[in-house]
Length: 272
Image (cartoon, rainbow, N blue to C red; front, side, top):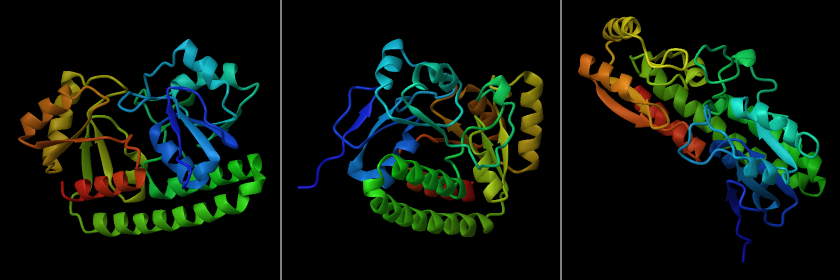
């Protein structure tokens, strides 16, 4: 019988495997799992449903995380504070390497590193992250290098197909703007020639003047849907939706199956 893959949340401990891997968020787990299979054990730092931009691991979690051999990080604020505790025994891999980052004032990341961290919300960028994961796992566990390469090839094919689906679907859509409660979709919009309009302003609720400007712009763009996220306060988005007489739709950028989530997002954006 195939050995079941044990995924640990919040550092409950580690199963026997060749590579003990830490990831910051659940979508990264999906990538590592697809490439590493039964040869990795994964721990996710930020639990499902939590806001990764404001999350703070407990001291106990940080201590237990030191058992990890590899950590794939994204640039979230909490990561910087964890690095000194992990860098001695853990290989820390920045998933942003080789990616053209989008500058942001949304308050998602460190003041010294003001870039949009949502790099998993792009099929093209997921391919780069997957290739990096396969390389690092192969270096750590060369005995299974061919398996990692095979799994990477299959995943890349799926991501190419997803990219083509998204491009075709969104090219047909007359709506080139999406109105969102939190600016998580910058890389997705860059890939498919969309414009993201954020209700949140530099990580804070919109001011009255900002709300007025948003409403005027949204009317001009004929916005019929406001996209909200459960990790962020929906109050501003619901208020604008009421003013616009628009529908609201909750989306979750942190869904584990990132391929299916991006496919869902493309359909929602195309039909909005």
